[in-house]
Length: 300
Image 1 (cartoon, rainbow, N blue to C red):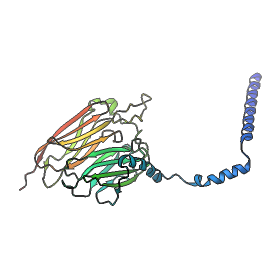
Image 2: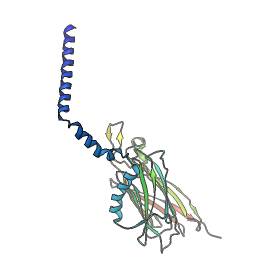
Image 3: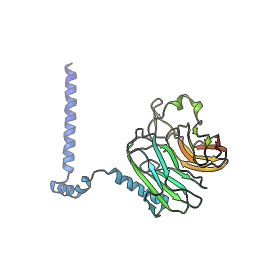
Image 4: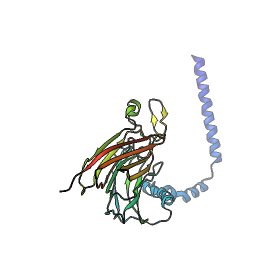
């Protein structure tokens, strides 16, 4: 017992001596007090500035803006479209987003493209919608992952080439790395299936409304599986589209910024009875599609 205590005391003495020697060496390498004072004085301004998430987001946006639009003018007059999203998200992995067109779209003037951007996401451009030819949509809605406090923007490109933007600051954290729900481990039979809510009886004076969800993990590659203790490989939908009677309503280029089980809500102007078809392509070269019959109401 006595020998053990001696060994322990000797080890503690050695450790204390090593710490003292380390401190002496560090002290010898430090600059003199006047130099430290001057250094602190020159850096006071930088250190005193608090982090500004909105300013940082704008810096990131500057890079994205240049890549997408170069030096083109982007109007923010609020007359073309409106973005609606929660200021503080209940679930960062499923942030609801609604986009409304504020103009009466016609063959002469319509929104040709929409760019949905989340500045601070790993892939800032969450999706690009293309509407050509014009099918008279008024609203779109979806659910996004938001990785950290960020500006969210929607930019419309009209068929005349002009650009118009609306934006909102979103408080959400961890959406891109949030673990998936359990269905992709248990009920694989649902993979690639569609869930749809569609008004089958359509008044020609009222746009048709549809909300369609595809069951898909849309894995980002950043999610950690607590069961296997490994990261879940990326597997996400990159293209979606809708057609009515074989004519395109829109196409979407996207990525894992869409939530698990990506959803799209939209409206359009059918003039006759027909068939609505939705399709999706994913990063493993899978294609999924489903069709629904749509009937129009005869005007009296």
